[in-house]
Image (cartoon, rainbow, N blue to C red; front, side):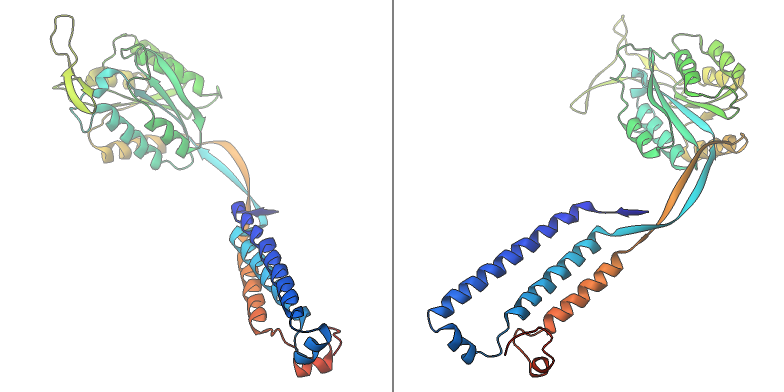
Length: 345
């Protein structure tokens, strides 16, 4: 097994033909210039120790050293063994409320951003569990299917906003029904749906949907985001509050956290309700819930254990550079006797 880390460094090998071309041009210029002053035989007598072979050898050494340095930067890796990794965990689906009421700023910076922070921190504390994300307002929309790619989950999460849904409202029922399609194995007993919302269920059928989820073995944990005192829904322009959302009577709408609805939904599935004000408390309680659930083996991988090999190429490069530095262009007396390069003296 063999792989390369940084393929882009191969482009630096284009320097080698450039060096060779410059060397050839220099040698042609030198030869042409010397011929204007003396004949070939006279030049041999005047400079008996000049060696073209050594000059060529030095350039080849330099090019070889540069090639070794390039390979060191590419960092070849050799796989030494295969390891089988089995993943065990719980399937966790997050249903995030993206209705306009989540723009209320009774929690900092607002309910929706606080919800994103909570989900991000929960994901950061997961081990090998799979996650999925649902966005819902008046309708529910699958944002991310079940996956073990936590980076992708957090990326999709950050892109969620209140403008992604054309129909407004808080249809928790639709989110619960949609979550059932996320769990592909009917025999799973480790299903959990985490609903993050302010609890304003405008459809009013969430309890019935929770009963259906309970029958299919889905445990629901609800997290309330907001304040029971309520807050207006700001309408912003260029990041500044322009006005507040108003009803048909031109009265400012006050949206309030409804923990009773969220508590009832969680109770239907033997789940729990968590106040979302304290992130640390939310994470701790979610951990406790996950620890009580059965872990299922849902993914087995074979991972190759690769070891870096760049040090060998770096060592050869340094060795070749030392040889190039100490290799003289002129002939030496002891080399003349050995005649290693088969030169005529």
